[in-house]
Image: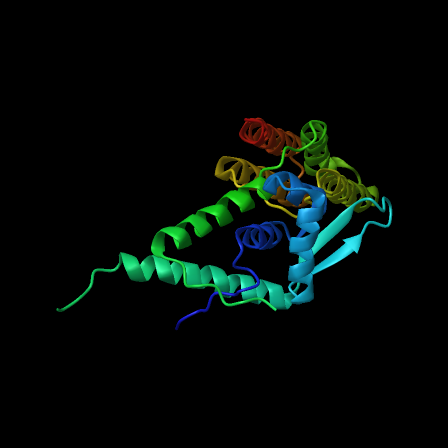
Length: 101
Length: 143
């Protein structure tokens, strides 16, 4: 079976965002911003692109409205898993020796 | 509308996979607040010692301590921004699992026989295991 790369997840920052959400389930936006070392506005754009695709949800904290929590949706989890599988297949395919010829 | 990117080569795909691992470690290995280690150690000890409490208070004590453990750890997770992330340190995870086994042993022995010193020994084992795990976790997340 061949998985396909997802054009929405492919940019490195978005891939890292999805990886963090896959590992942490629900992660605060500030944590992602610190890890990626990008500005808040740049992060907002990346998260908005993932959100438009239906891959992530954002929720503002009820206690502290400055804190925003981000999670992967079911669609996002599946897309991320397929994307990572496609990357693994690329690495594995090229690593295999070419037969015949 | 996103355009379909050209298929990456092996080195680019491998670099992307490395980026995934690094990103996940950044979330899973966030430093915990220092107070959570002694708090968890004491609460685990209290939970393991709960069989020594006479019925009918025993179950109540156990439930209260259990709720305290979950509430404190969830709150600590909220404070650091990752309430559900599991640390990557295998030694820490093994220490927590060992601590859990001592806890289960204390509860099982405490409910079957009247051997307070065994329950106390299991509680000590549970606390020491978690204490060792705490040191490992603290060091692994503050490099």
